[in-house]
Amino acid sequence: MKPSLVLQKLRSGENVVCFKSNLADARVVEIAALAGFDCIWLDQEHIGQDWSILAAQIWAAQSQNKDTLVRVPRGSYSDYVKPLEMNASGIMVPHVMSPEDAQNVIRMTRFYPLGARAIDGGNADGAYTAADFKQYLKDANQQRFVILQIEDPEPLEQLEEIASLEGFDMLFFGPGDFSQAIGAPGDMDHPKIIAARQRVAEVARKFGKFAGTTGGLGSLSAYQDMGYQFISMGADVIGLSQYCADLMAGFANRNQKGTSTDYYKA
Image (spheres, one colour):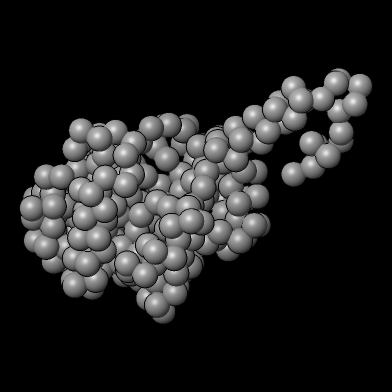
């Protein structure tokens, strides 16, 4: 099993940068990987790509020796393990609400002795049965990451108990849904969000887990100083939307005959 670039860098104390892809074309993933992002975030919670599309996106990232993170929907155990069997480098489970919830995730996604994940071995992560069986189970536990997303106020009360569990790698703070849950949708500077973001990073470090969140170039240094080694920065839909808007804004400010070709340059 190919080692995870994300885990390699995090375990070495380095920072990791991730890029979110909402679009279905695997070439988008390859472009982001070619640009140098360590990891590409593929979302199944809000998008639900066909499994064949997800497989192609994972292959595209692997072609450039980059990792893929699949945020899974909250569903059955098969929703969690299928991306791992397709050889995604890791999964992120949204809206983890309690230690019991977290323990159930670990049970479904880790092999013995950490959990009781359903075993197949006949897919990409097990080299289609060509991998040594016991080594496959060991590698899956050590070289594939599981992230628990904290994006509600409720789990903060038991965050230390969650973080103390063995079998997952990262706590990921999601500010968007958290802002809605506290009655301040989109207010990313709300004191409760600032406090929660700091607490997630502090508790993760205290219990030997990594901390992840979303951010931009302006907040990158501050979040890294806070203890966040994994930051998801940017998305394909944002870039494409802004590029199209910029083109049309430029077009509107010029006569059609005098439109500059500069607007067609990335």
